[in-house]
Amino acid sequence: MQRYHDTRSDPLPIHSPQRDIERANLERQMAEFLLRGGEIEQVGHKMSSAPATFTINPERTPVYAHLFSPVPDATQEVMPPAQIGGPIPENNTHAALIMADAVLGNSPKWIARKHHMTEKYVRQVARDYHITFHTQR
Image 1: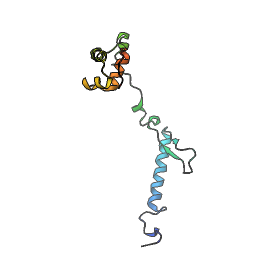
Image 2: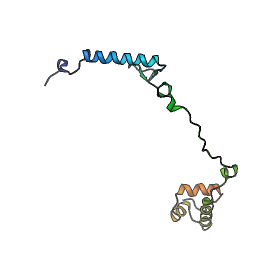
Image 3: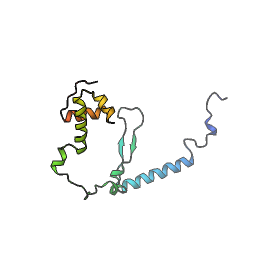
Image 4: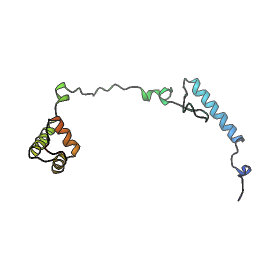
């Protein structure tokens, strides 16, 4: 076992002809990207001791900008004001069941289990319809 790592047998050293060619290709492609109007936005931690990183924002590049442009949605349905604030008809039947059990003295937990609802939902409907319980738990 070697005490230290021997870098002579590494497949690609830091300065090799292959890496120099790749580095030159990347610099050329980045220059072409900037000439076409692309922008490189620098992001990362400001107090980091590591070298600054950069990210190419696809929303601001000329290649992908059309994918992020807002599309007008013509199928939006406007709800009339009467339906926005009114209770849901299903809630009316749930409120009636909850109110009947609350008058009998049952707790919200017991009512929820009996009618296959969650206790949170029972308490929300009770709050909306001003239903009071004799026992809470």
